[in-house]
Image (cartoon, rainbow, N blue to C red; front, side):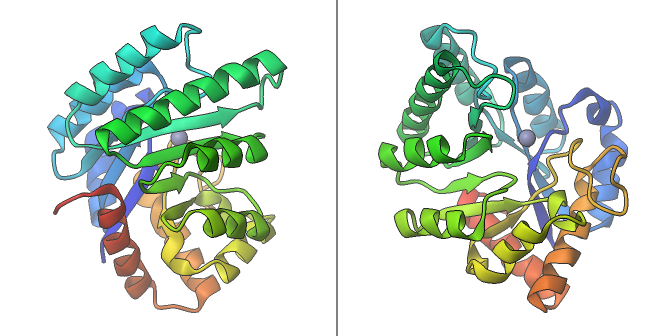
Length: 262
Ligand SMILES: [Zn+2]
């Protein structure tokens, strides 16, 4: 059995300092690859270091998180270009998108949309897939992405929308994927369970978002890539599928989405 954790942050200090153990535990559990997603400019360096230290395990997504922009778009885009041109094992632009959770003022929304749009263009130029973060911004995320006409593969990381929202995406974009993580194991995951039951399953990928969103039975503790197996188990249970078969299908799909060669 092979699994890719398509969205994680091993660069985060709490995981980075324990990276050897985290790597070993992942491998023991069949988690043979992870994609570390940038969430700050400072994260580019440890993400690159990890890709060099674990060249067949750690892959890199580089981007500007919706709330990480400095306010100077051109300067930020130059830093992004630097990152994209220098980081090892680059497989996506991410995580980028919209996050209105802390501030939903008109001005902030406008700035975030500009940053998001600009990065979609950068991904187009580099012919890289997108990994999207969306929080309290469902309608705007949909509109910016679809209006951009972006043709590459797109993953909506930690998808939290309804079944109807997922279908709306699918009607407008064939190569859209839904990142499914620890939330699926929570007791109140009814909406996500419905997504798993009703959306065509060739649109799912697995993720942890570690160190955040720890699945049951470890909710509240520090998350790590090895825990993606609990998400897989839950998904297999909902779909009434063999766990190993499901894992292999998702693994092959994930390699294709991110252009990873084994
Ligand atoms: Zn993340």
